[in-house]
Length: 329
Image 1 (cartoon, rainbow, N blue to C red):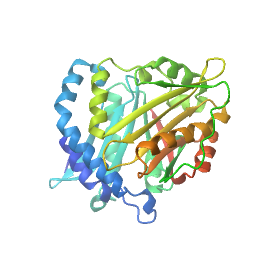
Image 2 (cartoon, helix red, strand yellow; image 1 turned 60 degrees about the vertical axis):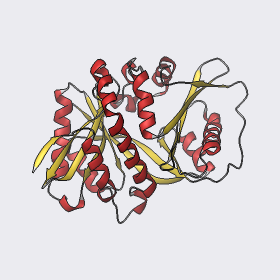
Image 3 (cartoon, helix red, strand yellow; image 1 turned 45 degrees about the horizontal axis):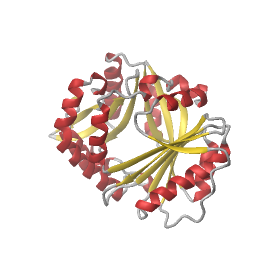
């Protein structure tokens, strides 16, 4: 048995190969890794391997990008029995565990606990102050593990999905509001917007800091590589109020390959619920125009009820409720 740090990119390919077996829930098949997701993940990891030398060069010249991905694996008899993946959020002191997995052949041995403890130690050694993760609400063993380790539940997200064939209606943008395109690097308006609308209980674990939104300049080289590896076309836009104040930020990703899923995302000023239906419908129409046959995913935080109502009206269905847990170091 060996616990060691993740070796990139080779370990990612090995983890991808066992992802569907690892994240299988017999009582909740909707939580399983779906075939289109598995194909997309495998495709992305193969492309990451091809571009990895370029990523390493960029990381060498930009310290702020060196925490792009870390993790640990538990290895036995040349098999990966369990693993974690984590990264720093921008250049802040907040870290996020994006994956915890133990293969069914190795469960009930305390492997997940030791891997998460190793992740906590790893973040502490790098002077991190907060460590976050998401867990499916009904995954009781995982929730119990994290809470015993000291994680607190502070927020929730609804993981929604839809496979639309057509858009029945497209509401008009309310009078006086203006929709404008934006990009990955116009960060300050979104930073100030999120400072204004983020709930206090959320900010305790996810403080709105410049380092989360302001990107190191070399990301102008890194982001196109990552998008190409993942097969994504990303579009971002904002909505400004009649007074010129930013009241919404949204984006939609469409796949440039046959595999995978499209995604939409939105952040809305709670004082402007009348924009919710327009935002959801606008993004659906844009995605359907270029990629009509794939599932579309939309994660909506519990403090955005107008967006959740608009998504349900548009036909989105709940796949899982995700609990966001935080650990203060």
